[in-house]
Image (cartoon, rainbow over all chains, first blue to last red; front, top):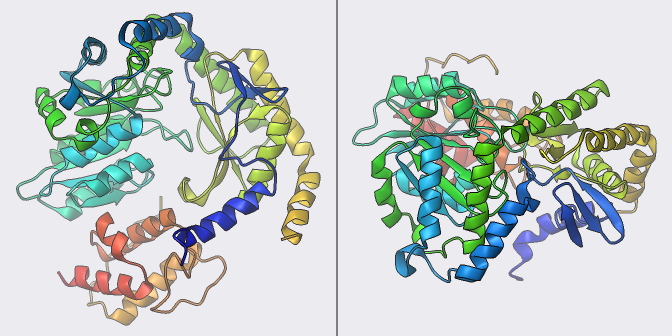
Length: 408
Length: 91
């Protein structure tokens, strides 16, 4: 028995996808030239799958802040905040995030994944019950698995189904209900009806936790996310997010309207037993937060480009998974077709994400695009032309799929 | 969203629960694998891990029960799912 035998089915599937070209889940970029362009070998690639929503990865102020932080504090923190202390910049960023969202408490984490893992696993104790959306991200599911609380799933984006399941469960003796949803869902790019979820939570006295990883910086008058856009931010108990998308860094945060959230720093294992975010990551995230506050035009351009791309793809007849948003998912008939098309697009100089089951809702195979405020109208037209040309390749690509399948 | 199905009023035998599970498995079993009690839901019937939870929500609605996620993680076969539903409907 080999220790890797248990992965044989996964390996067979991975090997099959690789017969169509480069590994879609192991793309190597030789250089990232700016927010919307990378290079593979000698080819310039338009980046249409990076979650770089505001295009701030090359913003001069964010880069300077990061460089300055390295010069003043070094490259790493080499330890956790509990054991090795915080840097003033950690606290300053927490203070800025809390103030920006009008929340009482903020805690930053080393990654977005760790944020939900730590917060959900700790906030829900053994007498509590977690209610999570059926399409929850892996870090929410893993947070639930680490928690001592039972977890009930409700149908995706359905406040009525949540209401039904809260009623069905009945009174929670000695504990609370914690409802977890996302603002914008990462695969289909569909929005949660947050105000309706707030109503259901208030009716049942449940706490509401919203992961705004893909919506913070992107929606709302001041960029706080979809809860702000729907005018209910002050009714949400917890907002989590990431630095690795609109904030163009790496790390995560959880905000709460409850001052009591502070004590969980001393209970969240994924916060306590991991190294704190590096000075450079904290500094660039802090600078990017200022951009979110000061430059609403970034959001405006992002949504205009998203509408342009969504409309163009819809006019071509593509099956799109949701209304226009900075995430646009094109549904394909199956994994092999999607992989073949993904390769063809990359050869044509357009990088999108290939998303396949089980990481996708409804077992869908998707060509997933994430937009950036850094795109020009012309760049969106380049992406649209590639998708138009792709339609003309249908027979050739299907023949390629059949040829590879026949060769085993 | 599918219309909710009213919960049946009579007791549920293992055979009835098995038949219901087979019925709910239809959309997740495009290769028409033969379903027996010993069938591994993921291993034999090739239902992906996300679809398993969709199947579970269908059972929760039909029987008006809650099947917590951690319980689902321990259920590997159709027969084990029958037993879990029978226990929860008896509570």
